[in-house]
Length: 377
Image (tube, rainbow, N blue to C red; front, side):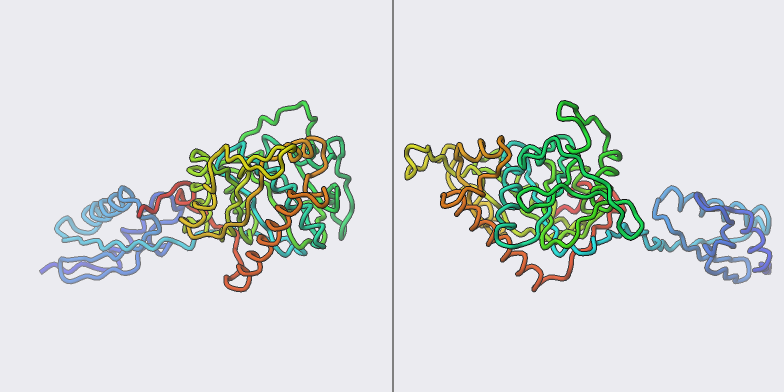
């Protein structure tokens, strides 16, 4: 009876290289073991790729090589075990000195997300918190206009021997926006990687100092910039802005789902209902629910996330934003009260989140799973 030589088989296997690996399968450690029983040989192979065609190819190569170089009569069995390597994690660095990073998001455009961000920022600053705003809406940066600093340009300062951007300060809020680096008339026509690189510079190459809250004004929707931000930074929590109408709510739902997705897992601090009702100046006690009533409040209940507050649709909000003096700075007005309640709720939910949940890590998107709702229920 024929007896196969294990050493000979290993020499034969040294002539095979697995797809995508430079070394042969013995050198690389892919061949975990070779067992021989008379004319039978069992090759135990450990592969790092689960791709079926690569496995089949490796099996076929092993059988063919043993038959050609060792014995044509050998009965060859290949046991393949897939051990995916530890994926290189995209580890987000926290920014030293920044306690809480809050992403302000919306499923769709036009719901007043930037207006809410600006007014929330100045309200938090009025309450005594140290606040910064990162305008991550690369293609439609609004913060320079809303804070009346459209023509300002950040200066470069030296911090610990490194050149850093100094954010622009307005109404006690530190601000960085791509709008500071382009002329107001110029459109930003960039592909995703360029936009992400610019954002990373504004995050990590800036001297933000000590902040209690950094608010990130995200672009509308769920896309490339969102993933870049969440890969770069450990976000404490997200708030989602919506109007009460059905179309906006459908998109707000997707916005909440994005943060809650298993591969992203950013706590949702709550939903804000903007343009909740219209109140004309001359009839301050009248409320007209032109976009529907309490839609975002009901959505928050359905999704079991906190409802953070409602902001009315008042002409002075729009005017204040256009003039670069956020409406929440107006004293003794219903608007000031609305934003104060909103800010208190955001602070409370942040405290609750920090007490009850571990610190968020920046997400590690290593597969397409981070890009769509792959995990079907």
